[in-house]
Length: 281
Image (cartoon, rainbow, N blue to C red; front, side, top):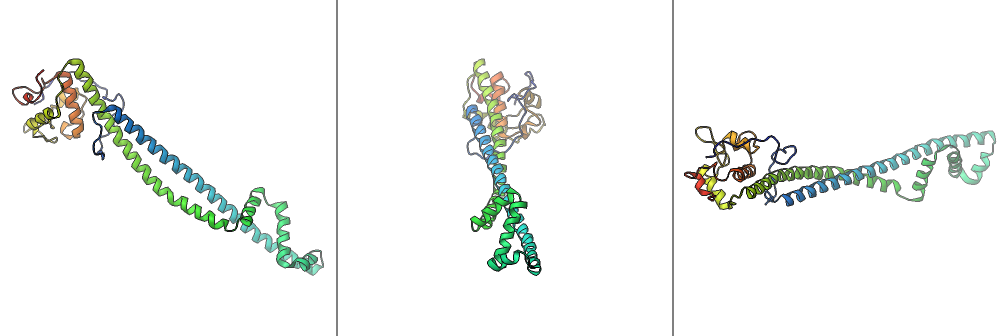
C-alpha cells in the first residue's frame, strides 16, 4: 500500500492549465514519449487550422456567388421595368407621331425596346449592374452555373464543420497525451537524478496486481487506499493528483505512480508486502 509523506506542489506537471481527461482513440498513444506527443499535437492543430481556412474560403466564395446571383436578379428586374417603360413610350410616341415610330418601323418593337434599354443602361444603370449584364449576355447559362456553384459551396459547409469538430476532438486528445507525457518525462528525469533503478513494465504490472489485482477503479475495504497502486489521497496530492485516485484514467495513475517512485523509490510500497515486486534500490 502506498505510504504517506512527501512535499506537495501546486503547479500542474505541464506547467500550464491542466487539460480535462479524455478517452484517446489512438491505438498506441505516446504516453511516455514527450517529443512525439508534442509533434502529434502540432499536427492536430495544423489539421484543424487547415480545415478552418478551407471553411473560411468556402464561405467567402459562396458569398461571392450569392452576390453574382443578386446582381443577375437586379439586372432582370431592371430590364423588365425598363422594357415596360420602353413599350409604353413606343406606343405613346407612335400615337403622337414621334421619332420612335420610325425606330419601331425599322427595328420592330422587340429591337426598339432593346435599343431603349441600352440607352437607359448607359445613362442610369451603375457600372456594377453593367458588368453583370455583360456576363449574362456574353456567357450563356451564367445563372445556371452560378447557382450550381453556390449549391456546391453551400453543401460543403456542413461537411467542413463536421471535420472541424472531429479535428477539435483530436486536439483535445493530443493535449491530454502531452500532459501525461510531461508527467512521465518529469518522472524519468527525476528518477535518473535520484539514481533509482528503472522498473520494467512487468515490475509495474506485478505491483498493480499485488495492490489491486490490476484494477484501476479499486477502493480498499477500509476506504483509505484507491486505484491500481492503492494511493492514499494525500500521497496522490504530493504528485499533483486531484480528486479520488481511483477516478483518474489509467494512464494518469501510471504516470503519477512513476513520479512517486522517481522521488522516493520503492519506499511508498513496503517491501514486506507489494513493494517486493519493484527493483531493490
